[in-house]
Length: 140
Image (tube, rainbow, N blue to C red):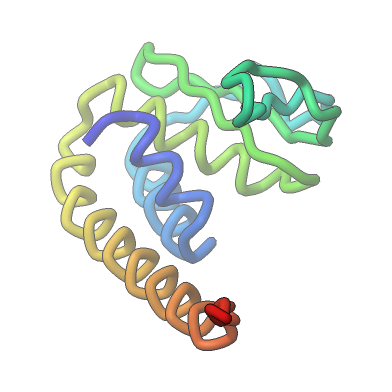
């Protein structure tokens, strides 16, 4: 599983999953904080559909943390003020870079969470389609 997909699951999924995975590393390895969780701003990019061009819609508050596990640096970034979760994401990222044995077991848990997220999104879309209005024109 690639980094982008894994991070998306951890951010959109249950916060307990990220906590459990990070705690598993904290129990067995020394985690060095390179950059303690801090706040910053980042620009949000959007695509304008008519011209298919990118533009910046504005700024959003984010939290960033960097740690080192077994000589590998990991980074965690997410929108909002979530210090602990940013650090957890950084620990998980570093664990994957260090190819720690715990990461092999995590794949199934991440895939299960991804399926839960997909199921929830499907239910939400189905609820939205129920409210969809159908416009028909009459031929005179």
